Image 1 (tube, rainbow, N blue to C red):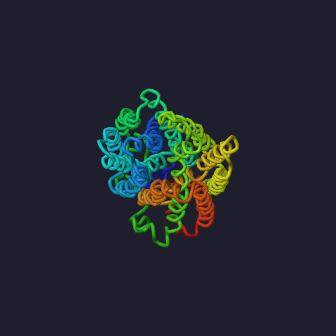
Image 2 (image 1 turned 180 degrees about the vertical axis):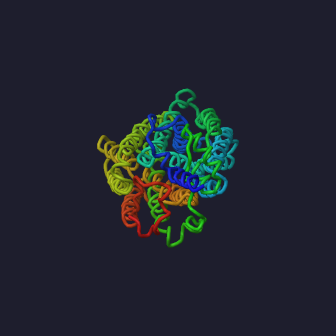
Image 3 (image 1 turned 90 degrees about the vertical axis):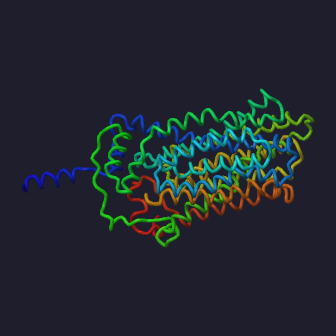
Length: 480
């Protein structure tokens, strides 16, 4: 009997935690299921970039068709972003309560339906409502896509995998501009904006079907004491049999809820996740959405044909947006080497420099010098934002909270950030008209520098740390 008990104890001691199984490096570092999960999570970010930047291309056409005033133009631009604000917090909490996969599939279904309805909108109120619903589905993807990847990837290169998926936002941004160019060439009419939205229905339906085949997050199942389900999910994810060590007793793993995000234990993490992200979104979405409009104002005023003006501005925007992709390409190999915090600080400072250069164009007569200042400034901004804050805020928010409130924390941070995005999208046209592009860019220079300062003061570096321990140890206000 004693031998049996000893053998049983040795067997228990030989078991590994879920993260230890994930961190193992078998002959194939990642299973086909891990790659499938990563791929459809990346496509969610692609759709976000595509829709937001498609709106930037479509907005001049919508404005022309419906003769929109500046306030209503801002409302159309802000509708998707306001939906993201609502969806991130709402569905982040649901993902903590009902499961990651449930929300992952639901959000994809909602996106497919409402992007199709946006293309069929019969008036501006309908378009605004459908774009808001599209935004809600994209907002829910902020916490769930990140968490689905984070909770399924090895600690040593988790940051690279999350960031590589998030980089598809930049590819989507470029894709949205290219789709706008394609539709304007195929159908050079004001109504081309409808096809710009409709084209995304088919790929989103494919992504929806693939998401239904994924396993639930085993880490989430363990946090809900669903041990057998966690074993099955881990087997399916890793494509091999695992024997997960039992989780710690309840007294060692207390239940947490949304309110804990603002407790002394986690307030530092909440500030780090939310405030720099808000400051980053102020400039990223303002510049991203309205780049075609800014370029049209600066360089194509003399072109009498409205469609040709929008086409020329869109081509210029596409050139600038290429730097979004290059910024991500530079950040992916650096995130697990240099770390999240240094890249975020450097990126914020670089964003401020790019915006400052672009702002100098206002005092220069039209010509090559003005063109160079605008393009160099915006291209530097796009590169540095995706090297730093646009990428790192997303990565950090999904890592620095414990499993029980990881969805709530990441969702709150994304929602709080979108207050900045919505404000910029709504007020950008109004402020440009009242105070001028140059003064507006000066404000964004200040917010970028403030983002670097807040990141430094509240820094928590999650590089290389296990998600099973992040946020579960000592209070994060002491963490570095």
